[in-house]
Length: 491
Image (cartoon, rainbow, N blue to C red; front, side, top):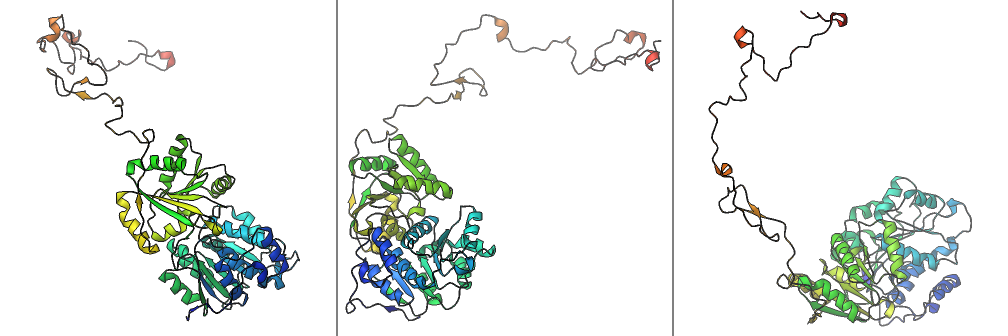
């Protein structure tokens, strides 16, 4: 594979969408969304895609990669668009794969908005939802399909989708797909596609594994980079606060109250931690909601819609929200937990400062996060200044020495003059005063009665002297039944 870097100095780049060779219907939709000027990745990638070249696009997250690959695909599929209701006139001609459901839904939302004035049909399929409506939509005919790899394989096995006429394939956030183990699924899906096609890879980071993937499935691709790899947006202010583990929640609450952050995404590393932090923020008077993989897709979409409407101040999320979420003018994000992967830090803080807006990224680091923080600094080639927060007395959690002691459960300890197996209940219950016993009979040791007969031996029967056999008291005597009822009567 001969990867060529696109020229940047000698080639004049367009500045506005109106400068591109796009259909009037597409330009109308773009104008209705408020887009006027091209971002750097759009200015470099769109003209090349209109020429039908394979591309590896690397750009900072939040710089408009979705429009960079969607608009030229729509332009090239317009001559094949049909207003017919026949499914045969609407085969899948463009396939866009995304690693997460949220990213797939985001790409589909933008794609549908770009194509709303054209007869091209768009659809989106991902897991966590009922397959029956998806099957019905696919059977009705779809021109552009956005999907996650796992659910697309489900439809391929069910034979509800045919990829034999696909002309364009987009792997969005391909590095993330490899991180979560989608490489075998990608290879299976690409095996269903025609060999003659245009393949595009777009991501904020390009690892060596991604380059090997591109070498296998792209034909003479052009490498389009508008920033150095793994760079963070310059319009995002990054702060790192050194805190104690016990002070993290109090620090977060104080930062949310001191900084003008009407909305924020708080990233944690575990689903359990997301639920616990959400409940703690709710107790502190902050409207919060959790978003993680244990939530159903309907719950995740409902929570995301409520957050976009401004009904939730803090969205506590795992890395399922680190990519693909496009929240308009999100003021900031907080890394409550330092991410395990340095690349995830780039994507997390990329949720703020999008489309040229300013943003704030706060990271709470403890002593045990030193190694992960060093990996992030090495990746983005930047040293963080460690800041501290002076917690207000009302915000600082009580320590063991300051907190009042809670009542403990009664504990049995041996008392003097008593056997080890017995004891008396101690604090918090007051010890009752011991009184001496008045009856000396209770203090006497046990003495066996020499005349007592053991219970396991049969007692002497009154008939023993008559020569009759004594019967144990535990054995019932045989009942006598009258001869009329079948017995032998009485003797």
